[in-house]
Amino acid sequence: MSSVHIPVVAAARPAVPSRLIVAMAAGAGFSVASIYYSQPMLGVIASGLGSDAQATGMVPTLTQLGYALGILLLAPLGDRFDRRQLILLKSLVLAAALAGAALSGSLPTLLLASLLIGLMATVAQDVVPSAAMLAPEAERGAVVGKVMTGLLLGILLSRVASGLVAEALGWRAMFGIAAGSVVVMALVLARELPHLAPTTSLRYPALLRSLAHLWRGQPQLRRAVFAQGLLAVGFSAFWSTLAVMLHDRYQLGSAVAGAFGIAGAAGALAAPLAGRWADRLGSHAVARIAIGIALLGFAMLLLDAWLPRVAIVPLLAISAVVFDFGFQAALVSHQTLVYGLAPEARSRLNALLFTGVFLGMAAGGALGAVVLAHFGWSGVATLATVAAGCSLVVRLR
Image (tube, rainbow, N blue to C red; front, top):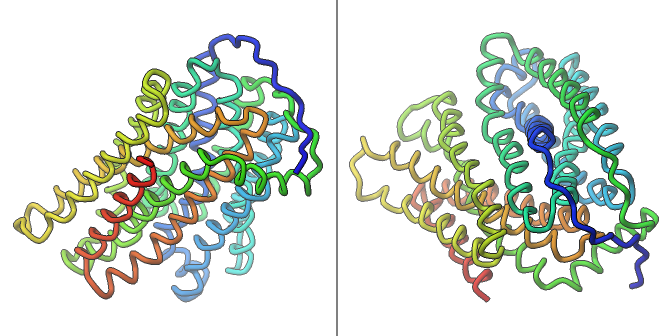
């Protein structure tokens, strides 16, 4: 398939100012956090709207569905239009959707707002390629890693924040605060983020068709997607079943399960480290090391059967730190790798990578629930370990 793109000038770029890196990291974090706020609040949302638990469970489902659709259908637009304008427009619509959620008077209204939140939260997937575009080639991994730190902290800490705010002020207040935070984020990015020229003149249908062309023509991309997607299976299997296991085995509530997000947040430290290592050692080597670390963290969960009961929760926390560190380091390494494959298509490459990650997340959540029901927590640990092992095999090829 022939593609028309605007050549990217390979002139040396100046270092990205620290203030701009912080602004992009915050922008990525606050936007992606929007898709996770609802999860710890489902009980109070159901009570407040008078809906049953099963119907209310569609709120995070539609948010995740919107995000997946947004990655596939909207993220590629970053190659076609000025990313700065795209980021600001989507941020304002995201803030409006969050405000709509806060004002929802019925479950159908909240479900519609949730779908729109997911679609527009993909502004995070516009910010990260922007960082890669602005960074000098020798510092691309480090800059992407720093911005990803903000994104990952947004994911990991959003559940903790929403649980605390909802308990103190109610679920509507959390959505309202989230809307305000996105508006502030948009104002900061409007001041700090420069205009970013489009890198292709393809029309939208051709832009989407070019995704298939990139997939077929870039074996390095396919390997990165499969490796990270398999890691995501184990990652999601753990986090999607942890709260149920803690409740059933130890009668621990959602607050304790949410606190594990703090342990996992330590893994966000991996992002800037992995970025710097990728610049020095190469993305392939760092990805292999990172997957090995994640494999070790998942394998630690297999010790559950041989440890005394009092040691299980500390084991879970340590394991979460280790495998989360490996998962995030592998993700940044793979991003750094794919961004270098076709500079004119970074938004589309990013869309393909994260589509694979979210497919892995969805598969891990579904498989984790089935395995926990039939084989218990040891089955979930085995699933996560095997998935990480397969990821390492893919990366070693």
